[in-house]
Image 1 (cartoon, rainbow over the protein chains, first blue to last red):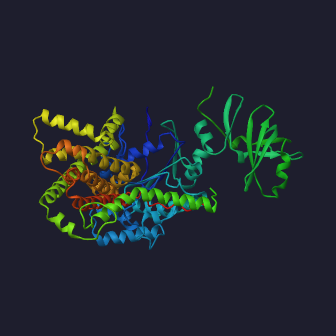
Image 2 (image 1 turned 180 degrees about the vertical axis):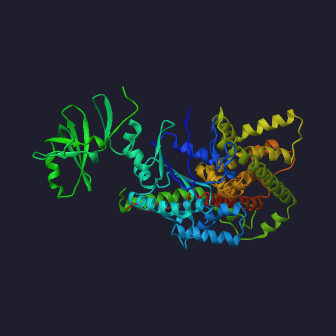
Image 3 (image 1 turned 90 degrees about the horizontal axis):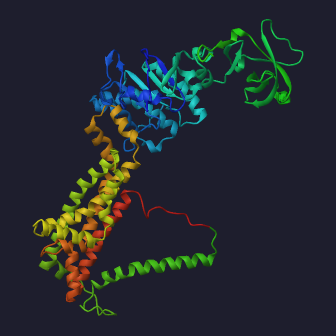
Length: 319
Length: 269
């Protein structure tokens, strides 16, 4: 079985680069190849122009933040963070200084004597990050590092990670299946599926201009429609739902349908609409006014309107 | 479970009875070791410690003790090397027939001692090997290896694989990974395995009977004395000693591996 094939990827120095894809898409395998844990059957991996394809992990200038953190349970937090420096025979005084700085960076000052099992999940995650960053590697590899944290902590850490990345200026290669995470943090995103890269681009690119139906479907909710032989995507927030008496802006395309389902998601309300032509679309409205009337839309006929400028034509998969 | 007052009292009494049945005979042996008479009859005529002195000065007991300790230490050393290596091999590699090989490693412990004993005896005489302390060591190593193997393998399986990768990722070469990560993580399991192995070897009778020459280990000496029935108080002293030497390592081993007996279950109310 082939996990990754035909991947041709150039990651810029100092970039926050994300490999985004569902499980089994080969993103972790690709990351492990960069780290040196897996060896590709064919192809090359270069680090700063130097071929490292056959170099074992301990000779590569990369460091990894593991999904399960992989903190050494028999070492204190300080020893964990200083391990890479100790192996590189950095003098004790400098080592202490750098460990201190790393602890400050992840806001864990004073916890260096603790054992990993005395820390919370979020703190362990920070130690894992500090242990990798302290070595100032060429590339920092992060394998779903926030996967085990709860939503609130995850969102805080997303912002913090991005700040740390800017601060240290190290190239980050980040693996995640969480599209929101990818869009929030990355400079560029590679969307992967079945061991191939579907699209590489900035978050705005992959969201607004998905290169394939897979990308459109994987990132955000997307409505794929076929009109006049053209397949295109309309994002839910670009669709306006018109009630009786409301008029569309000039140039808008209007189609009638019936609301099948109303989903209240706090900040907004999601309407699942069955068009009279058969397709199902999702439209989103911000809950600016009282959302109390939202439920009353259930089963009501409505008209959906969008401008062609807000749609994106899928180039591939055209019949 | 909700148990009434009397049910709980009855259950506790029953448990106490069973423990008494299991451990009273052992306590009795400790007690008889202080018996002034060399006939085990009740009530005992008086208490004395003179058997301890005479046992210690008995050259046969000393020779047997020396042999037991030597054989135990040597068998443990062999078991440590072979058992740990086997555990690493089975854990790391995946090859055709791995489970079968794993079973073969464990089998000597499950195999009745009499079979191991007769088989080794036949093998040694077939190969023209004179029975000596070395044959005893070989015999003991067959089952001592298993406890080391089992302990180390269990620990390796419980250890996160990513720890090894993390160490490599941080720049450690194969030796450094072993020294800094693998060894510290498995060390208590290795020590526990070694202690259990020594305890097993120290009180082994059957395999020893078939693999020892004219010399006897402590258990063999006990066995002989009981048949002759002359030095019963000395036997009690030696048995008490063997009990201590075998139980203490087992208790320490249980502590080290964090399993068995120490977990407290809150009483059901």
